[in-house]
Length: 425
Image (tube, rainbow, N blue to C red; front, side, top):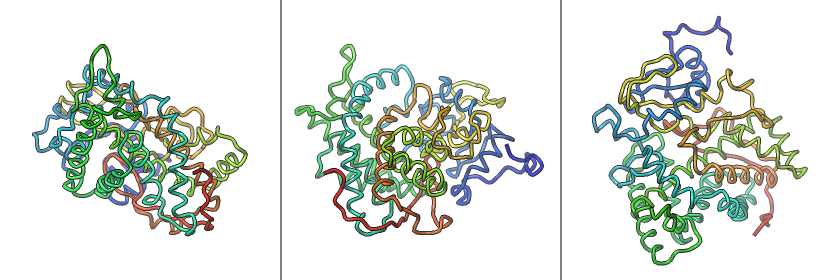
């Protein structure tokens, strides 16, 4: 808890969504947790929404079925509704995915998708993630410098999810371009993003159509095969699901790796502990460490949009029907009421029920894949490039400043150049 004597009066709420805020939002979130834990604010898009910042309130809101994921419940006129989801998804007919729907449709779709996207499938993919990781490091290890976002954290999850989905190798660079457009416009104009979404949707629809006649051992084939008491995904549903697995799965992992490396740079004692543990062939600290990095400075700052379907009370505030509610995961995960020394990075923290992957029926389906990619990326970087360090002053780094995600634009690093014979082919 911070010193009450230095706390500004309740009326002097910190300014939100500025560039300074994007760099370090945590002091503002601490103020909100203490003084206005459920806070109505106008977002940069002009839409008004409630921000929920305390852990207990956040956990309750994430599981509250009166808070719908369906933008149709937004009380604002249609032009405002268009500002609350993934740019272009409405026009591209991609709305029927897990981030936008409620039970019973959500229950049915999630059950079908879970049959395809199993922890076993992810576990079988471990050697491929390791090979992709080594291949990307090989490309810059001989130079002694790199931008870890663009050369490593960004391509790794794109190529991984493409391979899992069954996107042919020769088409994967197209996905890299479309995904790059989404990342670059995180805080900017939506037109380029909408175009990329449309291109991705068209491609995935065609790929699913082709695979129906030639099923393989990949996630899209599994989505087509998945059935439950004779119930199958429609082609439109399969396309929307493939899209959201890609969309939700890549930027979160980019930021998990980027923010994770940045947090280790800023906390050298913890980084040394992890490197010593890895050098000793242990995996325990890596496993708890990735969970702690998710809690401490996670990739998803705010959970995706929810809309009240009836009046309800959260944290003592009355939420009206149709009001948007944004659960601030970054604030909840540093709540001192839930986490001891929440502003301290402790890679061995075990009491760590963080909300980085959400909670309730919308808990992240891709969490096992994100964990695998995060653990593999960090372990391999720290093992192969042990003297990795920031190549610019920390204060020169720029954060992307979008609403939902938290991530760095670039992460320039330097290290002793290596010969590029990788640890796996």
